[in-house]
Image (tube, rainbow, N blue to C red):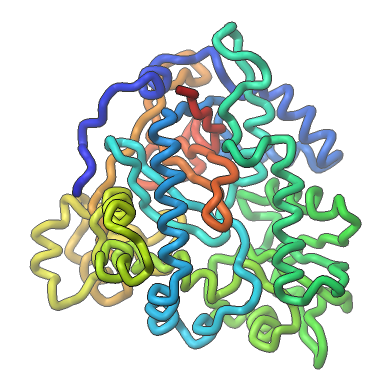
Length: 431
């Protein structure tokens, strides 16, 4: 059943259109960062467009739909039928699932239809700790809401305990992989040239949270990693666990050879790891999740299967054999690389050229029906009102939503280049 393309007006949509009296208090945000990061607190100011000063409103019905879809999809993807399908289609490095599950996931939804539409799942979703800081800094200039604002946290995870939950999730992954008696001494947060990454401020927040229990935490480039007979090393220091923020999901690039070897030889716990990407974030999964026979084999009942079908836009694996049909229908489709991220190498069909379509056909892509976005009207620095597109990222683990964050942007895909855009806290309204 397709979701309605003309969603009903709700209090949430009305507030997103008109409300300017609830916002992120940047002075409060700066004080919190100063307390957490000390001399590194100013790094957020060097990433213009990373965070928005605005709050996005979500209705209780939208929140319930997203939470329900996440629970059902998590059940399906954890089932044997989906695990077997993912493993059979994955590179060799990702066919065997290690004890560690891979950590927190990001479920990204568009809210421009009556039913929220899941457009992708991510295994290393950026923004969780940034969104936490933004939610803590949200404030109101009116008496509509009491402080702290309700609805900024998911029901199961209060804001005050979320950082501890994040640290606990790393410890849980370590225990799954190494057992209760093993001591977690050193964690490496790994990305290519990490200081240049736009989300480097979040790496600093993770370092602060993970080091609170006495664990040593490093932020390193994979080029700084080496292996010996028994360990993964950074400048001679043993690394026990890697928080992997690379977008080379299968560690195929030469510059990631040491990390790849450490993962294959189990010299360090890597999260998220290649098998997690294959099991959760391969975009072909969104096509397979619309296969009712697979959903039934996964144990979902009639109403549950319908809920999953309603939550995922029609998605199909691109095949040269249906090139003519795809080209004819291209204006209603979005073409995404199977292992892509952040809209890179993705094409909106109504802007697709023949040359780009040839690239799509010769590489691994899915075609997904365009899911309309909702919008947030805000005032920019010149007090002019502008309308930004919205998608909502749900951070979740084991089917439980921990926190929501919106990304505000203009253009074809999310980006951090839109004035007034970036990550924004999500306020879920009550009944």
